[in-house]
Amino acid sequence: TRFFTKCDEGEHRSLWHDLPLFEMVAGKPTGSLNFVCEIPKWTRKKFEIATKEPLNPIKQDEKKGELRVFKKGDIYFNYGCFPRTWEDPEFIHPDVGVGGDNDPLDVCEIGLRQIETGAVRPVKVLGVLCMIDEGEADWKVVAIDRTDPWAEMLNDIEDVEKMIPGILDSIREWFRTYKIPDGKPANTFALDEKFMNKNYALGVVHETHEAWANLVKSNVEDEAVMSHPPSSEKPTTPQLKGMKRSTLKRNLSVPTIEALGHVQDSLLCDHFALSRALEAAGHVGIRADN
Figure (cartoon, rainbow, N blue to C red):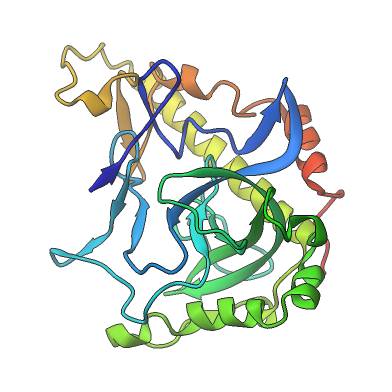
């Protein structure tokens, strides 16, 4: 099973590259970020964005030919990612000492409602936890659907512990132990296992968005230098309609020159617009140390 998304014109789009990171209304940021749900709460099938496939559909992960499920059991929160973010393996984060995991930035949405696979919801960022997975930084942003009944009462990570005591511990323990039933050791965490605050989390969002932008821009620049002739091949599947070509960079499917038009409003070059969007979401200056 693969979940694709379409634009208003009916053409297929990538949930990773074409969907804006920040929710915008009339050209202005609302303060919310767009959350892509991969795994609904109270389910266990391991769905994720296929970063290596054109148009990056959401599909159930496979290992050794078998569809993956969480043997630990159902997950306790809606799990997914932020579009237009990327955890760069070559960026050694100064606070954790290791590089990223080569995936979009993960999000744990803690609202009351179950969100369907492939659904996009505006969320408030509340904090972040840094898991170390096989020597790589795997950040887990904590967020809540902006329309959730709890949303008005939750504005930072300390509000979560105060209003919903125990939920942060349950998230940490889920990620610590979910691989043990597969015969693997428990995961560890950086930053003294602390959930860092909203400002810190938005700093991580900023870093990973810029890493994604650099990935896309370097891909386009590399293609321009190589001066490949236009491809005469036609798409063989309807899923490729709307994106003339994609290419692999660092073993990831990213837009080519022809497809770059779909991401021109992605804040690739407009640092002022990016700053406005981050400020609307609650980011204040440089990242705080919580």
